[in-house]
Image (tube, rainbow, N blue to C red; front, side, top):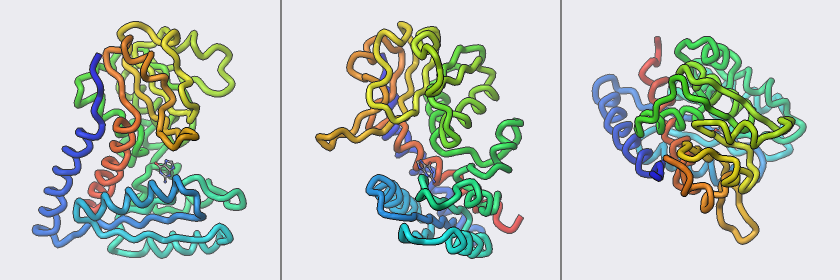
Length: 282
Ligand code: GUN
């Protein structure tokens, strides 16, 4: 069994992004810029945004965080996004999800200029991903693909079970895997018999936010298990969607939580923002 070290891999990626950023500044006088919009005071969202802003600073990006209260109107958020769409120093715009109930998330995401949609949530980028065209791809599934690549985990012809069908994780993950010629099964909350799908899969990717949902009897011997869940338990500790201790011995590869997919998400956000900056003005 080999542990996929997302922390180490993300560090390597950030080091090379830092070098590329420095070259872009020296050669073209472009400093990649990221705008993050956060609404409300959800502690987890605030923690993620803090990590994203710090990561930007570490690699030499310009970044701004727009903090807005829960009482904000949809129009005010849209106005801020439009301002960022027109700001030449901003290459990437990210609206931290989830949004408060009175805000229509789909409407908000549609306002982001697709060329600055570094989260890959705009329907334009989602459509391009599904058709296999170059696009901005959601950071978490993109980070998982990077892990497969760096650990030489073959996808073509493999049976992959994706657990969870969210717009942020499950659906883009399934599209990326399908584009890589895997045979993909997507399971979700209405799936009749989850274990019957996971136990047949060569690779299981799970991102649902249910602590320890995936148990050892649901996984095939030698499978690859990717855990996207980040759940905070009552004692304050973090745990994934996989019962790691019991599942890990059966796996060929597994990601830990923390230190697995989480740091890769942030590295991919930086990578997408740099990609956008290199196309600035084009
Ligand atoms: N909330 C949970 N994951 C994400 C993400 O990748 N991007 C944004 N914007 N919000 C999130």
